[in-house]
Image (cartoon, rainbow over all chains, first blue to last red; front, side, top):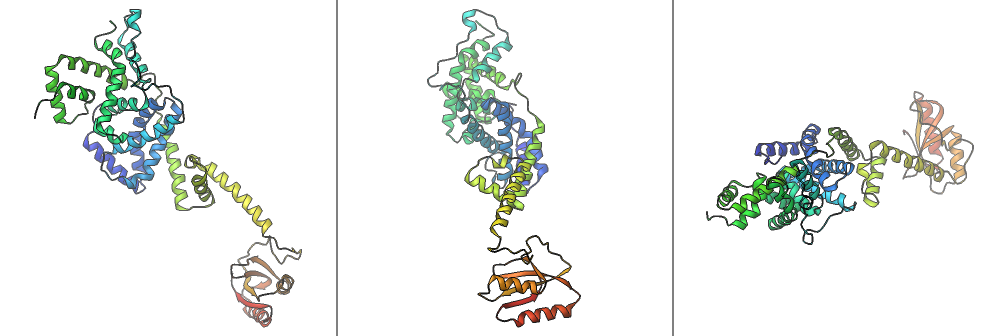
Length: 192
Length: 223
């Protein structure tokens, strides 16, 4: 999933979008098959509620159907579609209180196994990192998700989020800083 | 190309780990990695982060059947665009004024709401459309259906003709109003007891009506 989308895939997707603009339902089904799971995974990580994540997917794809004629191929189809998905997901979050911390004020997440002296297996450590990811603010979490799950470059993320590239790097820096104790322990081969 | 310093390389490590750098940036980061053990340690952390993010175990799984809902929504949207009927107009009006989620309302629900409003409008329209002094003679033809095989005439009355005269005129030709008055004040009157083939009788009827110049302004065959 972290592989970058090959250009041929982007071209195919751009063709589908053009066909959708002409009312081609078959092309819509093809695009849906590719993007439904991607948007869902992004949305479930952001919204953290299955039903809402499913709503986000169909809202996004409906928007794609309606707006396909306005897609000008200045950006990759994935950037365009994930931009819509980000907007919808953040809207869904606004209607739902999610406990997060502003990273600038947040202290690093401490690895609980340090005190307990436990030797955790890799799976448990990964689970801890996943849990810690849910504590990130939406703006920081989306950068991590878009990078590692969607394979987006920082330039694409800047386009998706509508912010400068430097802001994307800063958000990633804060996310790393927050997660560092857990990541360092696991990268070193388990709990100290 | 000048070598990338450690801090710049550190900024790009997450995207290096994700395989999401341009070739030139990737080469520069690799060069920096060769020079710095700290960077290599951080890269290992980024790889852990990547593993955590891409691990979907225990999360809800995508349901491909949701495409059925998406296609139904598109069908409703396209139908509304192509033929904006009452349900469509109601949807547009509601969406523009009150609702944000009308597009997501299932088609059947839209039709049901539209049908309910249509019923209300029909009841209200029938009530409001009743003449001020309704008659039991049947001349107003409120429940008379338009018979395509019957003779129909367009009838216009002179200005100032009262309702009683109008009714007597129509009853006098054994007619019933099936449509109107139009914006021009014309009524479509269905004539009982006359066949369309009986052109001579129809012509005489029209001539008799036009002869009443003080009452009838126009009389012609047709809907």
